[in-house]
Image (cartoon, rainbow, N blue to C red; front, top):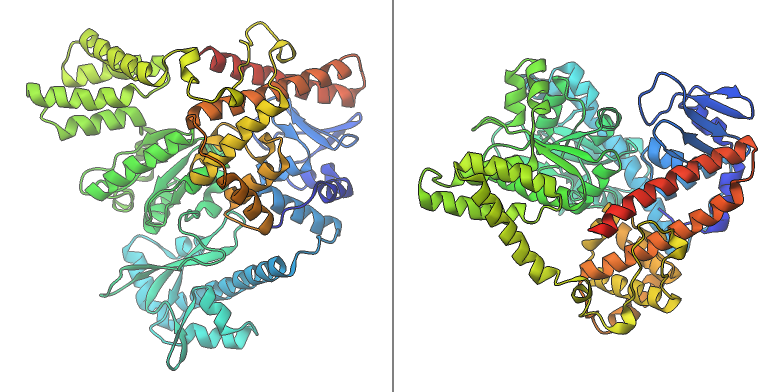
Length: 600
């Protein structure tokens, strides 16, 4: 998606009416100057969701969500910010800015691939319901997928033909087959183009906006590979897409958690038994991009992977990524020798729902896994298991969690709780002495010109705290961006803390961060990156620079909020009071987040 300048963003915002846009989703009733309705972001019986036409803002006094029309679209319809701008521009009849030729060509090609994928999905859908699809329909019924489910997930069939889709595309579009090749739909050979998928059940893969981005295909007879996916294209990336999320996103938001499985049929079988908040990771390793995608819908995840060795390993990898992303994770353990698909088909719906709802917190799951790997009836096995468990628990930030799971582990291993807790405290102390040698020692390896400190904010406002100079702010931002170039995976850690492109004061770094986030590139970003990579590597650790960067953002945010609150507190107009209440709530929430963090 293109990046829009601030002038265009404001032009589009003022061209639409927030009441009209929100009114498409929420029944609004006028009350004085404002409109009220039931909040779309949380369940309520009494309307607390207020929309101000004069300020073009919304705010919910129940859950605290609020913002402008862009915020609403991003949060309610799961759009990215550029998608929200483009959608509102189209709604208002505002012409999008002209793109450079190269970007314009790429954007056009992306739209054409979407169209080719749509045509392919229609073709596969029809073929499943044709005479040629009889065997495929029988196969799906054997897997517990009836006609209604097949329709719900728009399942299809690629017949055992070399040119079935090729002929269909020739008849129904003027788009070239070379582009269909780029879309991963056909392959070029000595005698021309031929279909990539043949004699396979087709599982269409859509993005959150319900556009077809690719396909998964499973053979219904002998042959390898059993599963075949669309290759990487301009619109399809296995490490970025989750199967079924387009169908389950509303249920995920309503239930406030997602059930993560491995395969297409796992997802469909759970959906059929009432677990409609399910998504699958396309049979590929779970990635940071998947975690980021999930975080747009919920902060809670239940992993339900296969019970075999590969499934256990995949669960543990996924756990680490999700926990590092700041998500709350549980694990629904599948009976040994089974998988979510087979388990769901063998159980009544209420049993399947209960199984998901009884999922174990991730720390309990890890402790149980460690205990199962060791002979805990022997002294040696018990000691080895305890060491592994302690190594995990010492990394847990919450002292309460440490204490509770320390108690659980000691009981499981039949050990003295006091001894286990003492060993955990000693291990945590050793780690702390290496990683946190004291407030001063923590940052001692950062060059003085790159360092500053902010006074303890307890009992003081941001305006009374020592503020970093512009030079210090730039030094920290430069160090953060230099590290991100070498370790782009750290972006997910920033996003989990609520830090993004807007957290930088340097416009070059804002631009570069956005490019890294979207895996895009341009000449400006290349020049900025070259300049940064030409500098020496920062002497400090990522954790220290990230903390300093976050403290900069905190200080600026609190100071800005305090300034606005002072200006607004003497006004009594209802629209200004609405903004004042929203800002005051945000201010209180931010201070609540900062103070415990600063006291650690």
